Amino acid sequence: MDILSSLGPTAIAGLAGLAVALLALYIGTRFLEQKETRDTLSQVDGYDVGAAADAGIIDEQALSGSMFERVGSQLFSGAGDFGRRFTPAGYVDKVRQKFVLAGRDSTAEVDRFLAMRVFAIASVPVLLFVMFVWNPLGFEGFTRIAITGAIIAALVLGPDAKLTRAVDARQTSIVSDLPDVLDLLTISVEAGLGFEQALDKTIETVPGALSTEFARMLGETRAGSSRADAMRALDARIDISEVRSFVLAILQADTFGVSIGRVLRSQADDMRIRRRQLAQEKAQKAPVKMLIPMVFCIFPALFVVILAPAMIQIVRELG
Image (cartoon, rainbow, N blue to C red; front, side, top):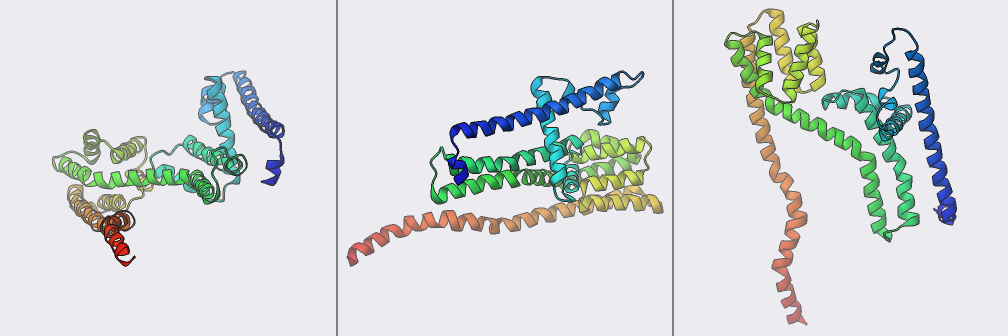
C-alpha cells in the first residue's frame, strides 16, 4: 500500500496504459492467428471453414461480427484458457458437471464461466487499491474493511453460488414435475400407446426441464442409441434419486419382461408420496427458519417498545 501511495498520478496512469497496451497486443495476436488459419484453410479445395469452426479449429465469432464482439470473444477466450491452465485439478470437470446438471452443457458456457472467474479474481487487487489507497468514498476503519470483504466474497464466491442455485432450482423443478409426468405417462401407456409414443405425448403436454430431458433421450434413441444407454445418460444429466429410481425400474422391466404400465403406475404412486413427504418436511423446517429473524429482528424491537417506557420510569423514580 505504501508503494502504491508513493506513486504519483502520472506513474499510475503509465502503468494502466501499459496494461491496456499489453492486453491489446494479446488480443491482436490471437485475432491475427485466427485470421491466418482461416485464410490458409480457405485456400484448400473442398475444405469447409464452417465445419472447422464447429470442430473448434477456428473461432468463427472472432472473425465475424462487430469490433466489440470480436474483441470480447478474444478476451473471454483468452481468460477462459488462462482459467483452465491455473485452476486446481478437477475443478473444471466439476464446473462442467454442474453446467450439465443445470441444463447448459455447452463448452462455450464453461469457458465463459471460467473467464468470469478470472475477471472477478483479477479485479480484487484493483478493489484493494481503490478502497485502501485511493478511497474516493471516504470509508474508514471497520466499515471500509467490512465493505471490502463483502465485495471480495461476492466476486470470488458469487459465480459458484449462482451456478449452484441454478442446479438446485432445476432439480427442484424436475422433482416437482416428475409425479405429474409419470401420471400422464402411465395413462398414455395404459390407453394403448407404446412407451416412446407416450413420451412424445407427455413432452407435448407438460413443458419443462424434465420434458426437455425426455425429448433429448428420445432423440438419442432415434439416432441409434439403445434405450438403456439413453436412459442412463438421462440419469447422469439429472442426477436425482427419484429419476434414478424411475430409470432403474424401466430398465428392469425391459430386462425381465414386466409390464411397463404396471411399473409406471407403481412409480407414479411412489413419486406422489415422496412429493407429499417433501412438502411436509419443508413445512416442519419453516418454524426453525423463522426463529432467526424473530430473535435478531423482531424481538429486539418488541423489547424496546414494551420495556423502554418502563425502564425510563424506573430510572426517574430511582433518580
